[in-house]
Length: 493
Image (tube, rainbow, N blue to C red):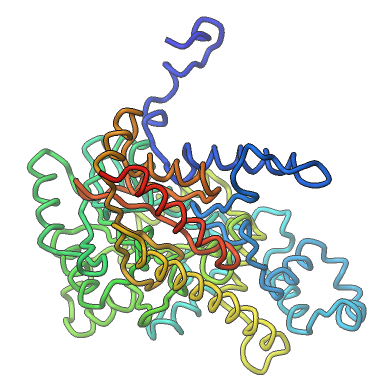
C-alpha cells in the first residue's frame, strides 16, 4: 500500500483501476527521460559550459507525431486567419494588415466569414461544432470522394483522439464488449478500451505484405473472441498506418468493408494521415463503401462507418489547437442523438481549433491571393518529410539486423530489429523487454527518443521500434547508425 494511503482520500491503490492499468508508451518512460535530458541541456547552454555528462548536445523527440515541436513551421494562411478571429478589432485596420503586415484579402475574407458563423471564438459553439464549419467539412468530403455528404452527420472534435473517445464510449456497453484493433496499433485505442473496462481484440497486420491486412487472421481473431464470450462490436482500421506508415490497398479495404458488413461491426476508420502519402494515392473508406454500394445495391446499406480526420497531422501539424472531425455513415438516428448528448456533456470542441479545421478542408485555391504561398509552404513541408523518411530508410538498410518496409505514408517508420542473444539476456536481467532496452540505450547514447515496438504491440518473437521523421535535417540519422554499430559490437555473441 502507498505510504500516503492513510493521509489522503486518494492514493494509488484506490483510484480507478482501469486508468491505472492503461498504458500509453508514446509518452512513457523514454519520453519522460528525454525531457529530463532536454531540461538539463537547456540549463547548461552557453555562456555556461556544455554539460559534459551527456554525450549529445540536443534531444531529438522522434517518439511522437508533434510536427511543430520539431520546428515544422505553421502554414501562414492558417495562422493569419487565427490571429484575426482571436482579435477581431484587427479587421478594422484592413489597410495596415494588407499594406504593412502581409495579409492577403482572402485571409481577411475568411476571418470575417468564420466570425459571422461563430460570433466569437471565446463563445461556445454548437456541441458538435459550428454549422458553417461542418458545412465546409461536408463539401471537402464530397469533393474528395465524389459522393454527397450531409453536414448534419459531421461532428467537429478536439482532435481525432476526442472523436475516438466519444465513439468508444458509445460502443462499449459492458465489460464483455470487444473491439478489433490492428497490431501494431496506436496505443490510444488499447488505452481507451482499458479505461472503459472493455476488451481489445487484437488482429495482426502482415509485415511481409507491407503491413497489409489478412482477412483470414482477422476472422480467426474475431471467432476466438466470440468463443470466449466477447461481444465484438467494432473494428478499427488506421490508414495510412500508425506506427507502420503503410497504406492499405483498395482490395484490403474492400475486404474489410465486406467483413464488417457481414458481421455487423462498426468500422472505425482512422484517416488522420490521409495527406501523408508518398506511394500511391489515398482512398477513403467512405469512397470505397459508396463504390461497393453502387455496385451491389442494398448489400452494404446498413454498414456503420465512422471516419476521423485531424489538423494535427498532414502538412498542417496544428496539434496544440486541438481540431478534428468525424463523419458518421449509416448510423441509427437514435444512436446519433445519444452521440450528440455525450459530446454535449463536454460542451464543444475548441472554437479556434474548429476554425483551423475550416482552413484545412478549404485552403486557398488556385487564383486566390494566398494560394501561391500556401502551395509553396505545403509542398516544402511534404518534400521535407519525404526526404527525411528516405534518409532514415536508407540508413536502416545499411544497419546490421535491421529490416524496414519502404516509406509509404504517415509520419513513421517501424523497422524490425534482430538483437544479439547477449543483449536480450541483459535486457531480461534489467527487467525490460529487449526492444525497450535497446531504445533506452539509444536515448542515453544519442539523445534520440524513439518508442519500442512493444508499446504498440508486435508478433511474438519479433522486435521493432517506431521513429518519426519530423525532426529537421538528416544529420541526426547518423546518431542512430553509429549507436547501432557500437551496440551490436558490444553485445555480439
